[in-house]
Image (cartoon, rainbow, N blue to C red):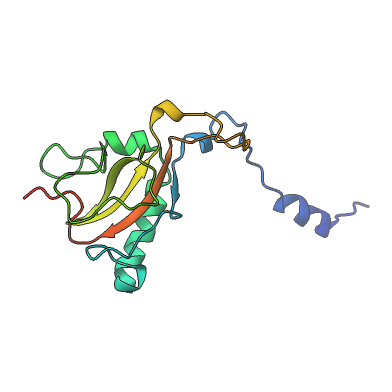
Length: 163
């Protein structure tokens, strides 16, 4: 007579079978998106409450998609009719902008934007490659150059004015 322990089998089935050590797992290359520097206080910027539910859903779906790849991937991914990319890194804060550099953002920030759709942009910065894997202030934590720090929601393309 064969005894089947259904509770044991259900438990064993519930254990994840994926490992970050698998050769087909790419968790380390996926970008991180951080909102700790978010600033909605400047006149051209918007707060989350200024966006409709539809706009917020689109933003979340875009973040979901963007987080599947590295920032470098999105810097190379073409978008639009000209030579633009999904992610543009400008290095410094643009001269032609309706925004100003917030005091709480490090001066080393490499400013950039994700193009969401039309004139809608997600503006922020990355850490320069010079800081890659360097420990910050003996904290035990290292800088990550694959993180995009969101600073502004820009639905009207006023961060880097091209016209």
